Image (cartoon, rainbow, N blue to C red; front, side, top):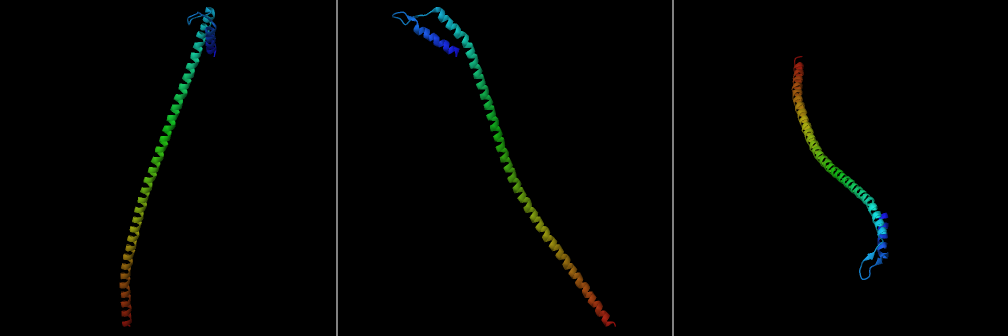
Length: 148
């Protein structure tokens, strides 16, 4: 704030200095004017250095914020893609599981029908053989009765 104070003093010096009649010129105390200019010169570099530091810090904060924002956006996009992939994978897995269950049920039905048919064939064959055996037993018993 020394710079502003020195500039205000310079302005006051000019306003309070004597004027040359019929011109816009003023007579200024040379020593006081040079003193104020020296104070301004020494103050300006400090003010500029502080302003540059503030600008650099602001740029750093902006860059860091932008990088963080991009990282957050990238993370969000990856998460959305992952969820989309997961849901697509889940949907495909469900479709595949339904197909597998359908095929398994079809195969099981065919196996049951084949087993029933095989069992029926075996039982029919057994019935036929038992019929023949029964017929032979009856015939044998008949012969035994007649031979007495």
